[in-house]
Length: 153
Image (cartoon, rainbow, N blue to C red):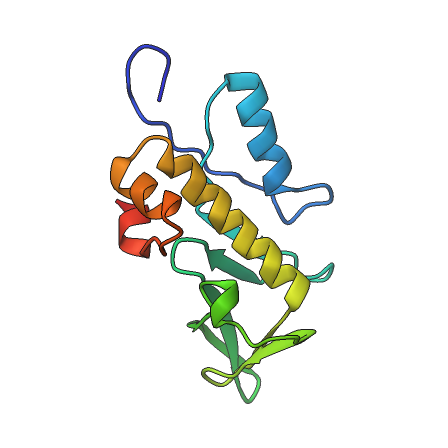
């Protein structure tokens, strides 16, 4: 909330595809410089060649990306694709180094370490929300899953 006014702020982080772009660093800077509590709702994933190929929606744990479709020499308009990640560690395959999710025409794979990092980010989001929302706090403190619809509202 803004100082004294109770007005929520929305921050869009741009240029994450550039060298040194890091959404977690921006979040820490917002906390330090503005004294606010940034709630990270989406997290970019990718490699060096394509740092933002995938976007993970943390409340739903869905991965979104665009699929390029080639028809001969023409590149068609990208088509949206998504897949559902396990929402909790308990619902994930055990002892997997890489998790393969085949949904749509392009399979998605994610390392177990990256998946654990995403769960930690989601848990941080829920913990922050638990400090300002009683319903979320009740679920969080009783180790119950917090549904995406409650996080979003």
